[in-house]
Image (tube, rainbow, N blue to C red; front, side, top):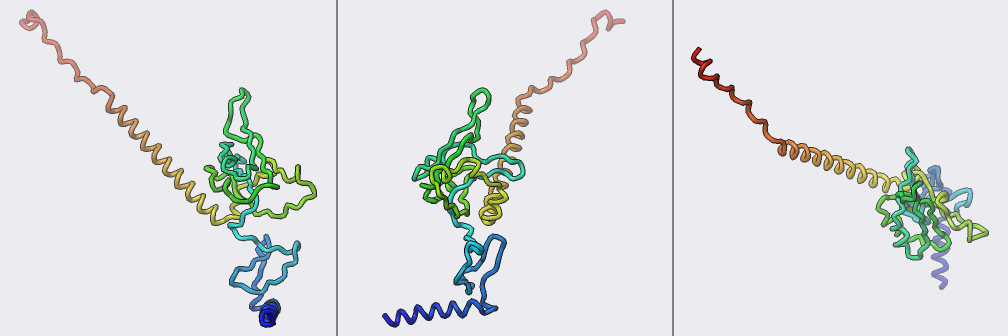
Length: 223
């Protein structure tokens, strides 16, 4: 028991000595918080909330909805897959409709009850349009849970520029995959147009040769 106490005090002493050593003070700021990699040493106390440890890129907390920062177009098509795969069933979606009552691929209402969300990430994993992602926001303390923890569509909306900043690796991979798919779709469309033009040319009847000149009547030939 005494040996364990001594070892624990040794760890505490080592951390205490690491912090003030300039060359080994392994922390820096990146604009979003204090950064320290697993190989760096030095931090043993963070002055929260003035200082915050930056979360890893793959950190997930509650979902968010993305919209294109340039056009303002929402990625969500209200397909409902995220609501179907959600284990605690905390997602509700109402599809929008036009003036004639015809459904359109946009959510009119989108709710997530973060008081029961388990942060599993299934909604982001199964979304076919990369419209829902896991956010890094974790400070959600409130004195009321029924209204303030029921996030609406406006609460969940975030621009793609924010996602590119918080998830740079995932954003780069997804953009590369999207550009690749667009290029494949363009090639397929051009190939289909070429085949259609070739089929139309083959189906066109061949031009008939010009008619031969008629022979003059015998009387005219004698003259």
